[in-house]
Length: 318
Image (cartoon, rainbow, N blue to C red; front, side, top):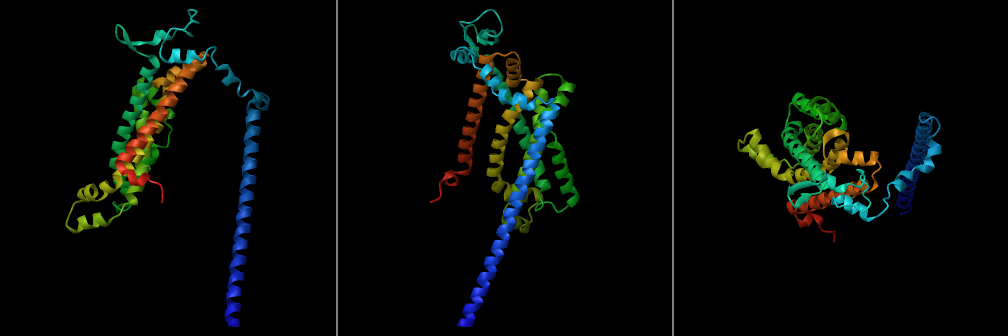
């Protein structure tokens, strides 16, 4: 018994010593990482200060001055600007001439300018996401290791999708704006290209994690490759595909807004102009509309995911 007890004691002491060594190593790596982060942060701040001729730290206390300058003289001005209502402060300048941007549908019925431009941004985002999902869906199965044995084909498709998502949407938009001129079409092309690469990668990773039993059964009865994919893989992965599609739609709404600021149409262009011209009420109205739109898209996405996947996936663990 003593020999057995001593054996357990030695093993326990060995485990304890090994755990202490691992814990000490983890603490060392943590402190080393924090030290590297501190050096990188200090270097970044020094570089920013030198780039701004030593004025970075001098101007840092004025960081929130811009926010203060954006406060309108009257809180109701934000809603007047949002719905294109006349302002009591109208002095003939464009700053308070909110009705100027109305889009009249009938003689007495109009769509406020910002709502119209927001719809244009949503159209760009939705159309681009649909195009991106369509081509990402087609390419993802050719990039999946469990469906394509040919390494050259698989590698080519993966590298192609990497190239598509290598450049940010705003860079692609600048390129196509130079070719096709200003408007929503270059924005649609730019966002679509990036979306194909991004969704294609997410999709083929989902496919590679799919259960292959259904595919093996279809192969055993002589089904073709397309039939095995369509009937054995697609039903498993489609809920995840739709979830990624909705997530990408939210991202593309924001991307379309940014592209609009560089000439891609939509609400982004008006936001850039209102900030540059110091139109406080208009700027806050656009920011408020963007916030409401993003929240609405997020809530719609959550509702649609629940309908597609089922309530059981959203229940709390018992």
